[in-house]
Length: 542
Image (tube, rainbow, N blue to C red; front, side):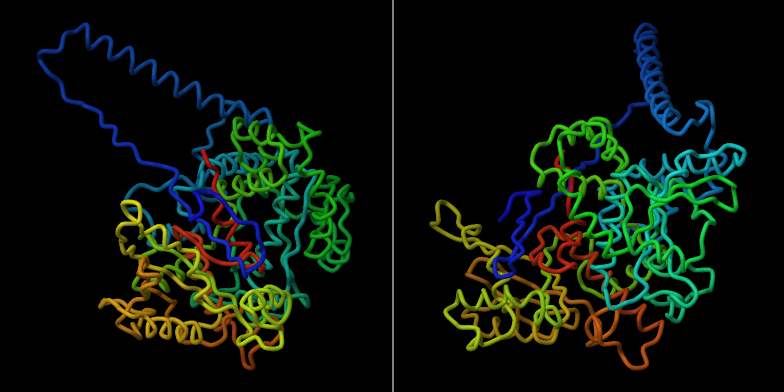
């Protein structure tokens, strides 16, 4: 098995990639003895008071240093008390007290909550809240903005749309600009309910449209800035056709100020990333690298570590891990709520230890993923004309679990290792048939209460290589269309509704959440979905 935090960059699905994630944080069991004893001397009590006082002073000093750092960047008075104004802009993003958590709170982020540094969003809320409550003072950060215009259609699925959004995050933080989202409006938004991500049961017209129906854009990215009133959407859309890193100036009709804006959307943004990737990873501009890391929520120590890195591959992984640590992918509350409800129907807890497999079939295998499929069958001795299947069989995914893992005492005996495995696929019917066939071919199956999927179609698990015992789980939907846009990327469903599109949205995000939090993930990085999973599973190896 691969080592913790190691990632295989091979995009060839005929040589599958697998990653293993472990928890970085351990809860402390420190306890404080508050009982008193008549045997304690006054001298000992005095020493204790001195120590406690010294520790309290250290806490005040460290808290003050945080405020000083913020005031140096944002010019906020050091004596400003943000506690009374936090509610004006939103939650402080601090962990609520026990008993005050909504059931879906743990589903807001794609990562486990303990892998997200909540203080990044909390500090951003403090700063934005200050300017919201002091309109006479102007946030100079809002003078130079990057405006990202998400897709206005659904045939680009979750993976494509979220990956492009993350690209905008990387570019805006590198260029040291707050990132604002400008969703399609009017004639540019043709979806019932205003979003390609559908309508929840409690839909109302006040809900955000477009990509913002799915994702809650963090304050640490937009800094509390708003879209300047310079142009109509039509003009912004025209401007986004060419990426201009120097931006263009316009006068905000709301404030009368001159604002410099970069307007970006998918294809031009991707082109800029390709052109600038070498410069972004360059070691020549130390100040730019340091600022970039800090804008992504790095501590001073983490930012310095990033500056000292030499290999471009390591630096890309590091900035991705910084994004993840700062909680870049936040689901809207209604999405988290409905994902949590959906996953209750699966006989596998997201908090348990389990592995994940992503099996990509469907439309991708006749286009950009065709090459790896052909390569796989060529290695098996077939030609492109004699391939028995137009996809890679499920059994190949299981080869990532090695037989050597079960050897004990130098191979004298073996131990059967049990695995609960969540399978996400756009072709569950065929994959389940493949699993049933593998079980039927098994010589000595073991009786087990669990089976394939939540409905337990079979009472037998799969024993692989006389070493690994797999129990597989699928999401409980009976649908045959899984793509956000319908039957594949460009084949909409006749009579599709806002609620049915939302259901497909929830099913996809439930799959993604389960795979993102699995202990070991086996999949391929030749699709947007696979690449997005790699991003979501990246962690700083402190």
